Length: 199
Length: 87
Image 1 (cartoon, chains in turn purple, yellow):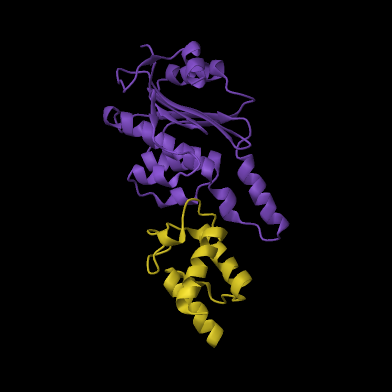
Image 2 (cartoon, chains in turn orange, cyan; image 1 turned 180 degrees about the horizontal axis):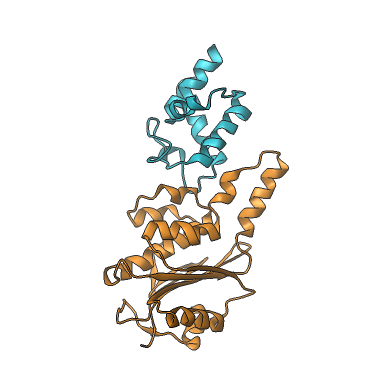
């Protein structure tokens, strides 16, 4: 079985691309995007902005492929960035300086949301990984995703979820190692991963 | 301060204290439940609201069991604060 990228979402400061098509949302204000999806998920409002971006991006991806995927299918999540949730951590550090630390600042931050809220929201029960890497590494993603397929997994949600200063750099994609197809079909290769990242 | 003014102030303080990104005061209904549905707050947020009462209104909850009723909505919270201030 040849694995295929069946849906992807690229998020940068200047916009959102879903499967080669731009979405009409401004990444500086996520309320419109959330309302546009017509979902009710109160925990969304508790997330830091970066987690909200990933939540919305995954929501878009999942809407595209959900009808085709068996709900019992095990979906592995493989995420990475270079600094975890340092931006929110720094905000929490500032509350320490005011002698009133805010627990709500660090509870709903990036890795927790990746591994927890997404699973709860979508009822995914597969394996979960969050790596800290110096930069987007297509070879690492390719090899690690294939490891999941070698042990019998059929689907993987993969993401490079980076923020450097105010610069957003997110790439989220679903890979199928089954006969299930999606709105797009891109060969799961290192070359194609690098192409997607340069969009 | 009138009840309406207090409710508006509380909404602003809750948004700031709980770091509710993308939420505005108009998104919070006076009578809507703060926990579970509505804003979907949880136990961590309850702690934040207790800290808010202490730091902004100098109110210390002696009996945590009172919290469920007091923190039901912004309206109930405002009523509790006004009663406390006039007692």
